[in-house]
Image (tube, rainbow, N blue to C red):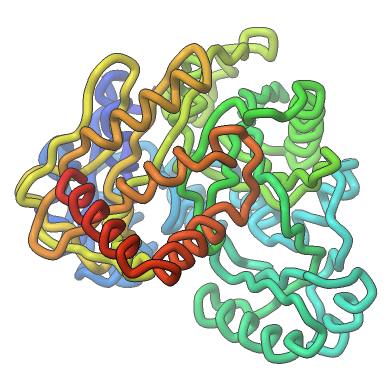
Length: 475
């Protein structure tokens, strides 16, 4: 096992990885930018290296600084967390060539699956179903338009190198295609340094379901069950749960089987997530593979009883998987809500600032993954995710009751600081979500319903404003 691990990340995931390392007796090296010197992971790490100024491209995305920090501190391995360089094949390759173990898939696997076009081709060859559309990147707007016209609208244009819900645009009409295609390609070039895109059918009413897989270097691959990530805003996940509600178990089992087959075909190693869309007719289609630990991994941990970060470290160190498929038996229901420092009443505008009060909820089977604390200055430079609130219960009804109570109990207060906690109570309390009849357009529907209620009655609008203000003080 490793004697020392450098955690190449920040925020709640850095603290999450650090805690497992401590429990395994592994020394930790935290990295931080000048803006993160007061972060929680800095306080608890065995060693800290300041790797650069606030901009991520000069700190958390700066490969030479990270590898030098690992080498200078004598780290054996680098855990990339999620986001930043976690799916960067170049970073993985630099670690490998420097004698550092990258806690994730090999660099060549990351490259083949990180490119959505090559991943689609590989998974199609492995027998995974794809949505109608192009497999290879389109050469120009005219070729892409021909594909869109052939498969029918709406379609979605996706960046080949995209990730995290970025670099994709929905087109509903033929006349909007050329303009949207160019905008999406330009955005992809700016975000990822790669303007290539492809086109596929867009499912208006669908469920977003993913399979957590684990693989070791000895050919063992298991799936640890499914997570439903249907509640999204602008392709960013807000609520996740396991198991997916109202989906037939046979369908979920089949998705698990094809995910394992896809992992074997790719020569996968470590933790990974295969993402699918499920339509109204219970047909499922492969979307992409995430070659890292997911933000929503706690829901799988709560239903399986496994520490997925621990399993990552063991597999990276050369150990075989600690379980076989028969051992992966999920129990109960887990739900996660992402608490972002954003104002839902102002189009989810980020509202960073100093947290004067920060009191997370407690009680049985309630987990909070966060880097926040009273007095912490939530920076504007990075992602707005402040906490992940996760609950477990024997049934979904009990889990929803517990989540609603925990969201109401969360106390986050600071000058100008707003959070999504009260909005998330609206989401989980919506009849479509409660009855598991929701689709990926649920959040848009809730926002429309809010606006319509405000437009119909000024008095209702005032009441809603007062109610949200009251809830905000409690969140």
